[in-house]
Amino acid sequence: MKCLRIIGFALAAAVICAGHANAEELSGTLRKIKDTGVINIGYRDSSIPFSYLDDNQKPVGFAIDICLKIVEAVKKELKLEKLTVEFNPVTSSARIPLLANGTIDLECGSTTNNPERLTQVAFTNTHFLTATRFISKKTSKLNSIEDLKGKTVASTSGTTNIKQLTEANAARNLGINIVPAKEHAESFLMVETDRAVAAVLDDILLASFAAGAKDPAAYVISTDAFSKPEPYGIMLRKDDPAFKKVADEATAALYRSAEGQRLYEKWFMQKIPPKGLNLNVPMGAELKKAFARPTDSPDPDFYKAM
Image (tube, rainbow, N blue to C red; front, side, top):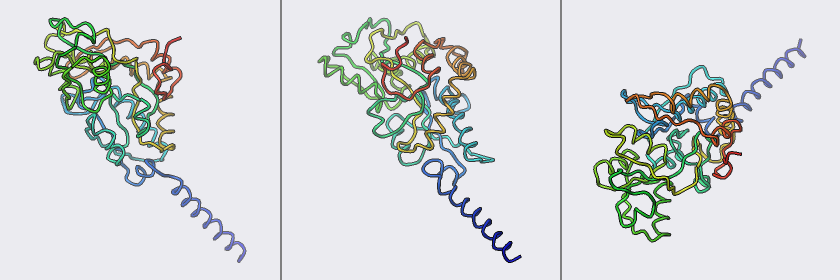
């Protein structure tokens, strides 16, 4: 009997130790979420159709739906009965600091994955490809980047767009008066109200703003681009491989599935809230390749269709 009691104590101790070991194995974002029962999502208020507010001031969009799939995977990974999702608004300038300081755990917007940002953050698999172009009123007759010479042009602070505009301005000696806006909607508004002749943003965002304008036919998006098509990804904290693994597996499974195709069509080929706009942007060959073989590569050349 004494031996049985000793064995029983030993087994109980082993179970307790195993429980402690499992708890200690969690680190970084997964540990934070497990301890709090909360996951924090950063969203944009005007990055249509990726992340924006609907008529009820609720965050919606293609990137938001992707992030909610990651939330489901995190809940399953941590074996949680309940996981509270809290949404926090972010701007182009604040998104990386808010991710780094733990205010948000996922940034679900229209953020370009590039080598410069990878020194500060990480990205999960690519969910869109876009190039930097400019929008203007047709009456301005601006056809090329060179046509912006000496003119006032808007772009959003903290974006790759304003960086590429600034670099092109210096390299080509264009003398453009660059006006930084706080958010994408403000950049487009400057063109609408004639405070700027053009706005430089990702082409898909420009398409969404033009579609939602009072007179969509009044605007034109340049063929001339400041960049190659670049990848968008959901942004995560750097050096957190366990959390990134969950996000990567969740997004890869989604993109490879029929659900991934349906999700794309929902936001790019059908009417979307709040105005019932249809962007009518079919999935290109490059993105089809990225969905078939999910990747977090920041290299635009990686996505060239064969």
